[in-house]
Length: 271
Image 1 (cartoon, rainbow, N blue to C red):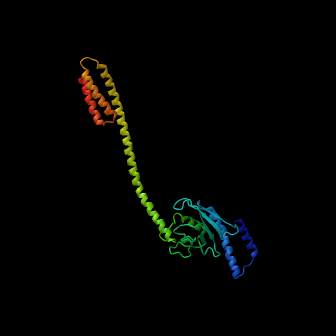
Image 2: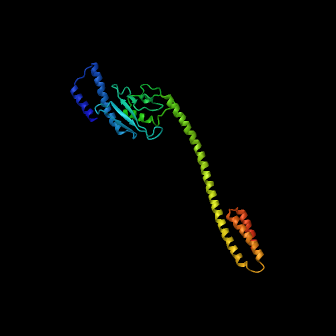
Image 3: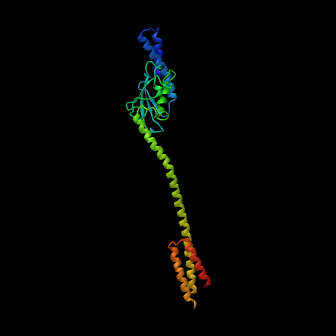
């Protein structure tokens, strides 16, 4: 870049008076273009998007360079796409010539590398086409936006790619609508499962306590069972106790356990 700037200054000092020949007009246009590019390239490098990189194969030829775009969001996130940009002699009255070197399935870029971008049109119906006030920075930012904000499905250059993207978008939206329902159902099932686990834990604690109480009562019955005249009643109560132990340890419902415990308590009291 600095080499080109110094070369332009040297050429201006050596050239002297200009003539009106066609060759001199062409040289003058190139000189004006190169002077503009020195300023615009410096501005571009200072305001380059974080997802873009520029490469000048020849530092003395700023009118030709390559742009690499690496999107960090959207459909093309993580991809790497190269463009070649060539600035014509009549710059900035006409837009740069841009071609996509990477084969891509994109609604606004053909597989041959042609690009649909209002900024690159000399005459645009919507008034957003090329104008002398445009710069290379605008071109680079516009190409970068083709992968995010300016992804246009309504006016595609590659119709098949646009239709494909729209189908995928509808499928994605449909999946997005279903996912919250599935998530809510899954949350409900998890809550039910946790509730059942807690209920089972409480039942287990109750049954364990009931078994301990019945074991204690059974031991007490054994202690008093040797008394004369009460052996038959002791056997009867013990039989009821054994049944209660079997039912309780076997997972008898809580309401039944309460009833049997009540009956057993009554028997013990009258005994």
